[in-house]
Each structure stands twice: as C-alpha cells, then as structure tokens.
Length: 462
Ligand SMILES: Nc1ncnc2c1ncn2[C@@H]1O[C@H](COP(=O)(O)OP(=O)(O)OP(=O)(O)O)[C@@H](O)[C@H]1O
Ligand SMILES: [Mg+2]
Image (cartoon, rainbow, N blue to C red):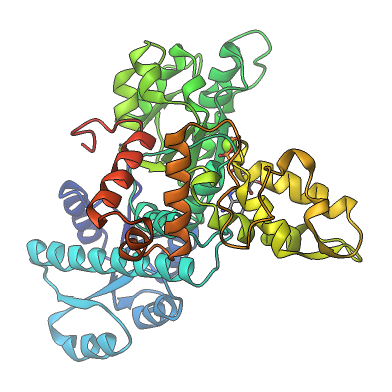
C-alpha cells in the first residue's frame, strides 16, 4: 500500500538530506525532505507528520523557533534535533523546549532510525490516549450509555488509531455511517477528506468512472479527464457503504486498490498511487454473500481486517431513553415539548425497534412536531410503537413488554440484556438477579457475539 511520508527531514545540506531521506525510506520509514524553515512550515501545514528530524542551523533562521511552534500545538509530531559536534549545549536547550531527543552529526543511521522509531511509538500512544479522552469527554456525537455502547466506544478508540481496513456490520439504521465518520474524526487522517461511496446506488458503467476517474475521450461524453472518488479521498477515508452490493467487476478493481494502493483511471494506462483508509459497511451477512458466490472471498478477507459490530437497539434498551432525549433536544422547536414522562420512556424502551436508531429518531421527530408543549406522555407515543402491557409496568421493570410474536429464545435474550443493563453492565450482579452462574451468563453473551459477527472465521486478522 502506498504510504504517505510520516517523517520530515529538515536539513539544508542537499546530499546529506537526500541520503537520510532515502535511507530512512529504505528502512520502512517513508520520509520527505525540507531544505529550509519555510519549506518545513509549508510541508507541515500541508499534511500531518509523526516525527521531524530537525537541523538547528538553517539558512532562513533558527530550528529552535520551529521546534517551539510545533510543540505549542497538542497532537503534533515529535521532534528529534540534529546537531553538530560543537553545539551539544543547544541540543540540551532543545530538549528543554520539548524535543524528543537529539542526534549528533555525523549520523550513525542505525541510531537515528532507532530514536525516530521510539518517537513514532510515543506519537501513536499519545494520539490513542487523546482519542480515548475525547470519547470520554463527550466531544463525540454518538449518544448512548449502555454497556454495549461503552464497549463500542472503547473499540472505536483503538480501531481509529490503526490504519487497517474496517468492516462495520449492523442492521439497518443502527449507526454504521456514524461509526465510520467517528473513526475518521478520531484517527490520524481527521484533517483529510471523508468520502462516502454508496456501492448500491450506482449503475455498473457509471460507478467505475465515478470511483476510479477517467481520461478524456475514454467513453462518449468523457470530454475531460476527471479524478475519481478514490483519488479525492487521498490522505483521508474512503467509506464504502453497502459494500455487499458492489458489482463483481468493481470488486476486482478494489482488491487491487486494497492490495497495492494503486488505481487506474478508466481509459488510462497510468497507475496512480493513493493513500486512503478503507471503512466499509454492510447490513447483510457478507460471509453469506461469499458462500453464495456474490462477493469475492479474497476481497472479503482484505476488507474485514478489523470487524466492528454495531448491536441493534433492542439489545441495548438502556440507550433508548438517552437517544430519545438526545433527539428531542436536537429537534426541539420553540414552544414544543421538552421532555418525556417516565411512562412514555418505558413504552419506547419496550418496543423492539426493527429500524433501530433511525426509526427512533423519526418517531421522536413526529412526536415533537405533533405534541403540545410540556411533557410527552404515553398517549403521544404512536400506537404502533406501544407494545401491549408496556408502560403500565413500573419504570425500569417493563417485564411484560415483549411483543406477542417473539420466540422464547429471543425473550430470554432480551430479558438478560435488560437485566444486564439495569445492573450497569455488572455481570456478577446481573447473574445474581437472573439466578444463573456468571459462567453461564458469559457463555450466552459470547454465543450472541459470535452470532452477531457472522461466525468470525479463524485466522482472518492477517
Ligand atoms: N449513537 C447514536 N447517537 C446519535 N445518533 C445516532 C446514533 N446512532 C445512529 N444515530 C442516528 O441514526 C440515524 C441512522 O444512523 P446511520 O445512518 O449511521 O445508520 P446506518 O447503520 O448507516 O443505516 P443504514 O443501514 O440504513 O445505512 C442517523 O440519523 C444517525 O445520526
Ligand atoms: Mg448507512
């Protein structure tokens, strides 16, 4: 996969700079060079680097100034100072100003490489910590405080920091696109573009040139060359929505893109390299599509390196009230209703929400528009949402609230999840309430998780 340089070598002496850039790149640390402070500033403004190897004496000024500028902004690259024998004292000053380390010229490249690798490690740890902080701090729009959501958030923090392809799986309306956008926003490419492509909505012929671009004259109507969405996403995230719908001809092209980071525009022989992160989403069982021969197996394994399952809303009933209030606050018009009664919330929580969060959002919107000011009560909950018996039960104990057409296994599942929710995710306490061993509870949860992830195949994390 083509990789953007994450290292910047600032050094005015041409041959020296070129040698270091080339050597580092050969050692798997792709680097770019800058010959002056001005060039370094321009490069840093243009894209994100993880580490900078910085010479202090530059033709247009003192490297120390750039060091201070870089360190003044949180989340920037680590800086390793390079300095001549005579000026070790300035290296010490640089350390005080926040440099990660210094290297004395002439370099022993092994040492420089080692220091830079340690700097890169520190950067990725820092970024991860900050991503988790931002999630915890609520600078993040995904509402919900169920144990399942907490688990999902933790997962997103870890997955965002990685660069491997992600497959987001979940029923319709659970928030897959929201997850994809969150991954982008929390990851190292947040400053790059987020480009969604709906694989289900386009026809085969058009799709190819939309996505991969075309050269002038490559087909009737192609009056000028155009870059495709893949190139537009360079440096950012390409979101392949409804990937299960991708026509077979395009699956081949995407396989190539994922494997080699290469694209070729329609009607062109030239291969272009792009650096994008892939996040795909599907609401159907892709594994099943593979078995049925509709989806390439090799592409399947490439795209689902990091599978993320978004659980349906009925499995996290504790989120319903939080989400309902969240949407009501967001949709609220002046003079409209401001809150729900406990009975109304209990009724909402008892409904199985086949359309998941999107359905909930639509219902809340309808209620907010139609209802008089004040508190939304049970009679404002649309009739089709009201499960017989629900809402009449005391808040938090909507035990009779299951629809009349549920199989016993599903009722058991919903009940377990509800108890788990009520005990704040504490499995020991939930097991006590349920009168089963903690082991039994864990076995159930594991079995459901495996089911949800579509029977994860062994060894597919390669
Ligand atoms: N945790 C959440 N907090 C707030 N809003 C949410 C949350 N999850 C989903 N939503 C909202 O619910 C709606 C549906 O979400 P989204 O479009 O991400 O679902 P999806 O899984 O991509 O759906 P589909 O399968 O239909 O493509 C959106 O309006 C989204 O903003
Ligand atoms: Mg979607």
